[in-house]
Image 1: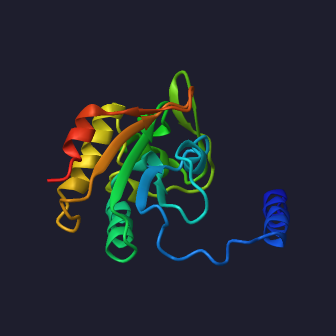
Image 2 (image 1 turned 180 degrees about the vertical axis):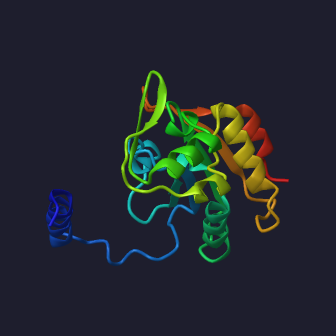
Length: 192
């Protein structure tokens, strides 16, 4: 067993030994959903004041409104009753450090982990690569405000999202822990 696997299983034993949340209902108690980044520095439960059972949280690289993220939001609303959506990106996001071409080139070189320094990304691997990464839109971005706005608009204009659901756009500041409103996204996400 790996060290990480051992640590996770031990932590779960402690959690399960005093677990008292088995009574929580399936729908989120506070009736909203958050789409945010998978970055380990973000803890949506803490920055949004959540407890187990309060809200749905969908996380992916960049907190982007991908087809799968929208699928989750639609299920959240249609089947589980959420009535408000939050799109929350963050400062210092790794998705701003590469683009589709860089990712495609790195994967074509090797499937091993790459590294970055002042001169850019470097493939350090020896494992074979694949050119399949060149056919994926990695949903990278250079401007946080614009990416939040783009995602709020994509959700707002999606044919499966009712126009009465408010969609809020924020950027989480990893240095201060604050949620910073993106005014244009808030405007774009207003119920119609």
